[in-house]
Length: 389
Length: 200
Image 1 (spheres, each protein chain N blue to C red):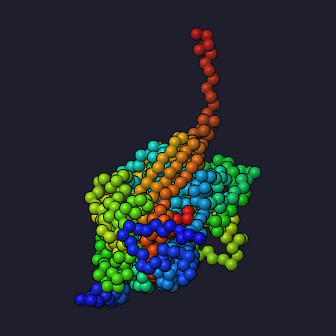
Image 2 (image 1 turned 90 degrees about the vertical axis):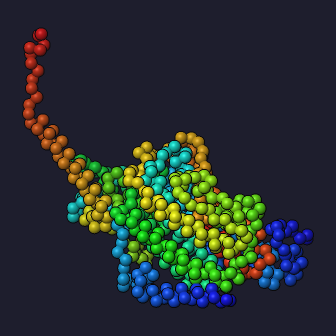
Image 3 (image 1 turned 45 degrees about the vertical axis):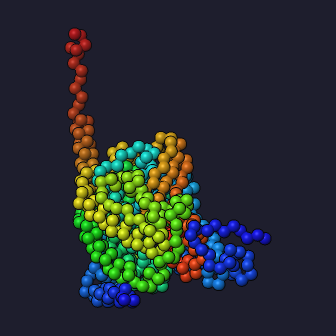
């Protein structure tokens, strides 16, 4: 049996000759997961090991498959909205927005000014809590058991409290509707959000003081899991992972969906594409999100939050198709819908960012040790609810 | 200095440890179940049926239109319409649910039933300690368990309840005015057509 052709990341050297031949007798096949705490859910990696180093890695997923797309084709447009919460369960509000944006394109609805601001505010709060959590989990994967993760969860708790008082639920928000948002802010919510935003900067300073110059963190992350720029582009990688590899691609700048053209923010871009850059990009993105939030919370105008043309019941968009995409905290989240004029979508398809970002896992991990594989997986930032759908 | 970053980090953890005793911003958790965080007004857990007055059967607002049953994403609502009618708060005869079941093990607390209900009959409760030893019958709630008085809704969601109560009071006043006008119209005899108009 001939050895399968091994595709290599450019500029990435294998460490021993045995690694090019998976059938060599001293290789060990190990199934990492699916019930392992480091796999962030039910995800399995079939790895071939030469001693401690990874020769091949095959991601195996689908354990959390819930038939989301097919269910959505059998229910009304509105009834799919709470299911989108459950895709990437850390970021239900950005999922809501991506789906609402697509249906609004399909049906030609206009979102009122205030609702656009509320969408930006909730999406950026979502980005803050997602990035804080993923940095905490990344440290957890490196063996920093608890402390950074608990600090991140403490800040996330404050943001989830905001979500609860606005939408009624901490995680499964189900907040956006086609043509606006479901309900207006309760009294004092904007001030409360301003307070949380103002305090979040202090947390970030502390978080960085705790970690960014930590020698162990630097030793474990720098030069590990390098994703070269060309490979990132060729693999369709998006989000912080692409930006860490030097691809300055952010849909908030490229598409300028919603009202993102009104805010001043920068898109941080990394140099090396290693795990440290992916960590650092997320920290920097949180700082940019704080800028957007500060501006948005100041500018948010009074007014209606729903398009008067929008219908809750008996919603039947004209036949046609639409693709809507937004920059979710994990990357480009897209929904593709075809309508045949009925109450259900004829075709409903999601482009999930963490699924696409996961496809290059083998290229990132080859040649690294098992312990590094866990860290690399943590830096990709996957949520299995979205990967498996 | 090698290890300086680690020492720096240790200073941060020390600050957080001491701060967690003094600064409420650094300790956001409470010791459940002895301590509880008060529920926020918008918080939702599972649906309940609103009834006016004290009698859950007579005052039930639900008219068994079955819109929520159709719109429910996970299809956890089961309704059987009554054969007879009973008067609603405006005195109009309406159907009522002979059976109204919600399977809480299927419900995903999305609140779509509340949004689509045209009669303000179904609202979200904030009760979450529903653990039971029987996962089939124990979590299948019938009309009798689901019915809660309007005062319960007013305590949970005062802003929403005030708006809805005002709307219902206005509807009732309008209906009463219309009924009074109709009664007055029925009481006054209709003026006979003047014969002169036929001849001219």
